[in-house]
Each structure stands twice: as structure tokens, then as C-alpha cells.
Length: 295
View (tube, rainbow, N blue to C red):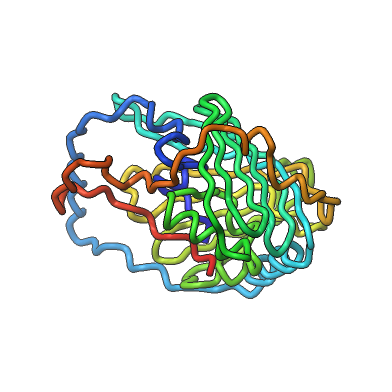
């Protein structure tokens, strides 16, 4: 499923240069735990919801996946909004805007602006290049020969993650269906994406997702997610627009001469300790979200 956790919010993280907007957010102070309401006498806890996979919901998810997977190239705009706790508790919202161009099986370009440093990402089937225009710094590394494998390698090695991963993998439905516990049809909306959409909710044991899918073109227009392990129930949202299927894509679109000429730095994972520092104690190690399901 689409992952939106801590590293997912960063969109581009390489060598500590591509920082998420949330890093500069006001850090929350420890808030007192709210006492849980007492169970009314004579009433038992509500029974767990029985897992249900509605055929209509699954059919819509499959139709969306088929439409995306059939396209040899894609371009779209992704407006991502994520929440981060403020120092007084209520969440603040931060956004990034990414212009995405992808060509199967091994080319991707993501140009991102947002509430933080701008970034550029290029993958040409052989190398990945993460560029920070403001600092004129670039990290370059060899990459696997497919988008799916590249996405996993980029996450594992440098914490690079895109919140629209499930849109660009070879088989979106495979990623969604893995571990799926609930899927149900909600109804139609006429106010999202300037078109009629079908609303579907689905969940596994980690995340609850609501998605708006174009009723006619079967393209995703809006995705919202909340993670079960997140006690604050922070919301993560991606609005997808300006869809173009099978647009022409020149080979030079997946590289940048300006980025190539920038000062080189090494890729490193944002969770890695600084060179020469002592490793953190086991209890102090930052929790890391699961890697993308792309294989």
C-alpha cells in the first residue's frame, strides 16, 4: 500500500540535504496522556469489525491498476499534504507539489517544490540522481534496471520515498492487495478532480486508505491514509491531477546537465549516524517505516 510515514513525508532525502518540511516544524512537547473513559456498567466493548472484501471495491481497485499498468508512460501532478504535530498539540499541515514523468520500465523524473527545499530526482535506467538546486548539490548512484527495484533500493540506501509509489509501480493492485483485510465501496463524489469519482476504502493491519477513482477513466484522483500505529491519527493525503497517459518522453528528460555539473555528495540514509559519532543506544534508535512493497 502507499506508505506515508516519517521518511515518506520527506519525498527526497539524500545525504542530509533533501530535508522534509516537517524537520523544521515546531517539535511537539510531551503531552499528558488522556485518561480513557470508563466502560459504562453493563456494557461490553464493541466487537471487532469482521473483515470484508467487497467485490465491487476490489473490481474498482483492479480497474485502476489495469489502467495505470497498461500505460507505457505517465505524467501527472501530485499535491501531497501531510501533518506534523505543533508544539501545542494540534497538527500543522505541510505540502509538496511534484511534477512526475515516468516511462516504463526504467525511467522516472520527479521535480518537487514544497514547504521546504526544492528537489529534483532523475532515473534513467542506470543511475539515480538526487539534486538540491538551492545548494547546488547532487548525489548520484548506480541503480537497478527497473522502476520497482529502483524505488526499493533508493528507500533502503538513502531514505528516498515518493508518496505516490503505488501509482508508478508495475502492478499497483499487487501492492494494494498484499495483506488486505478490508475493502468496501462508499459511493460516488462529484466534487473531486473535476469529475465523477467512485470512493473506495481499504485497509490492512497497518493503514486505512480512502481513494477516489475516476468513474469513467479509472484514474486515481485523491488518496487519504491514516496509520494504525499512529496514536495521533495524523492524516496523509495525495491529490493527483493533470493526468496524461502515454505522453512522448525524450531520453534527455530523465537527466539534467545542471544537476550533473553540481557538487557531488554521497548518498546516505537519513537515519544513519554522522561519520565518527557513536551509534545510538538501542532504545534511542529512530523507528523506521517499512520499505516500499515494490520488488
